[in-house]
Length: 213
Image 1 (cartoon, rainbow, N blue to C red):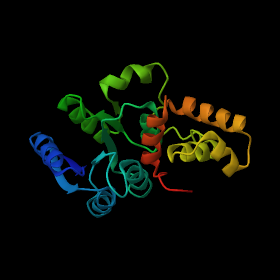
Image 2: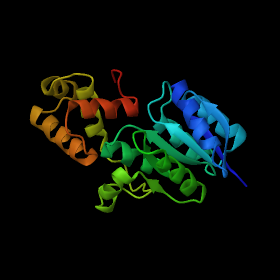
Image 3: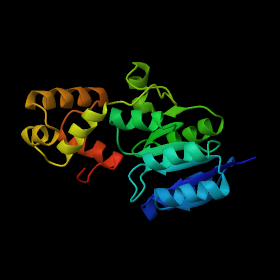
């Protein structure tokens, strides 16, 4: 039987390219397509595809939120995340959410096809460009839900930082010392593998934090 695949990507040209690539494989067929995470979740619930290929940066419900929803309500459907982001925080979040594959858009198309086949077998595939970091223990194994990556207070600090607040503003908002804010920010960025404000903003966008708490 062919692997039944859902393709979710908000850029239509890219989505059509993915459909052609997957549809040309003798062991695969595209059973549905979606332009955002909410539509992807609806298609999964209706069609129960074997694998859902999800772009991470989609409008509305993004790929991370869609992955969590699919794995919770449609666990038979495996998820392969497709993105340009190489940030360790992105990989950790998607794997912790239950994704079976993480593939970079800039990699060869063979990476995506390998990931789809591995996911359909119940396995895991991490893009070759990230595999060395995984082998070094920088990334968790699929389904690792030992706990949240950062604490609630660290999350609050990162969210306010991403929204453009200074350390002093954050300290006043949370009623803590500036030094405490600096410690929380440093710890959170270290845990998530973030190296600067741009990384923090990207991560906040992934989590849907870019609105005032």
